[in-house]
Length: 488
Image (cartoon, rainbow, N blue to C red):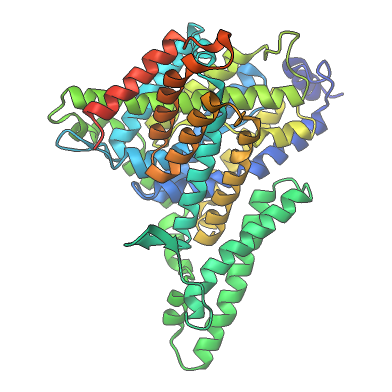
């Protein structure tokens, strides 16, 4: 063993934990492959409120910082990046929410992320964060990822144009009749279904990085078919530029001009990094009690989702890898939560939504990753990816939409652990799940789940569970105040 290898082994305790350097490297590459889609999907979502080119860099930096701390401080094989669901909530709900005489906007929403991150950090340092999670009912905990899964899938189907607005029913399925609709309109829809099917099949075959590889395969199919169709139209006498526009083909020159690494870093420096410090003033205009309650409720929503997502991922993944102690706890949990909180603060300053531990880390753990070397490899991969931005922005919407829908499939699995035979459990869980996509708001789902839990708990069939936890009651009261004084 070389001196360098020996140093790595000594620092990360690789041999001690039953692993080796080669296994750790493969595990790190596997984890990156399974979560690299966030570099495409996050700018796509946050691009609704900020330049996607700048968000791309912010996404990479948030992932690098969180994963490096996880690697070098916690020394655990878990990777971090801006969380799915939280980024959709950030872009589609918080940034557009009215407050005072204006809206939160991109900068204001980043202020909320910064505040929540600082709170996370404080609660982690004093050891309260884990205790708060213990006070939230299991029915709501299990329902949150499922509700977010439906919400993400809904956003993906909307982005693909498959779900469209309807005056009579609110939303409906887009027309798919190939005999009546032009193929140029239908092809992106079909490409979304094809990409989703590829991801699902690859996952069933246990191919590592199925989401990423599925997106790339779907992208290739999309371009091949679109180019053939464009060629047919050009042969029929149509201009290439018109045909390319019909089929959604990007202008390579424009992509390079707007999304080359230099342009992305320039956009990041101008529109993303530090923007919360000098463009968030509007959210404090006409600041009043309603504004305060709104900010509290949004921070609470971000905080609760992030806490449950991170702790659930850490415990669940570590349990599969036999990394828990005799008490069922992760020995370095506090350090892992510190990495999560610090990355959220840095991510807010850099211009992205809440950074959290990715459940895709389980792919690397399944490959044998047991130490921080696994996450160090992931961080290095994200660093390299910062300079490959033009490639990422050539990924069509149909591919990112399919990934969103499939992530929804992965997240909804928690419903199998909910006891729907018990009304005191079923009602809070159902409202938590259903209200997230139906109201387009994650916090409303959590709020109604918490409130109904407090109402129904005294009627539980288990006498030991008939008294709601005090902290649970306080959280529910805060949500009630939000509905009374803030909601519109």
